Length: 105
Image (tube, rainbow, N blue to C red; front, side, top):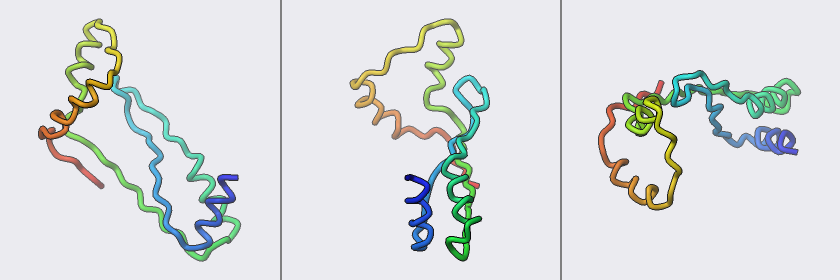
């Protein structure tokens, strides 16, 4: 059903933006990207449903990780803190701080 919808969007010439979401976990372990949506788009292209296709890969990288203090505590043996709504409200202050540059390639 989703593949059919994606094919229709592409036939109409509408843009689709999505993120495969590969990268690294907080522990530094590689996380495998999810290729499902990309494979649906490639299948629609192979079926010649539309004339052209442009894929623009984008990487967004950060100098610092916002959760680095809690991550360091976890590495020292502390348990992961449970997320709370109060922390979400407090996070506005954190997001105003400068954490280095963002690189988009």
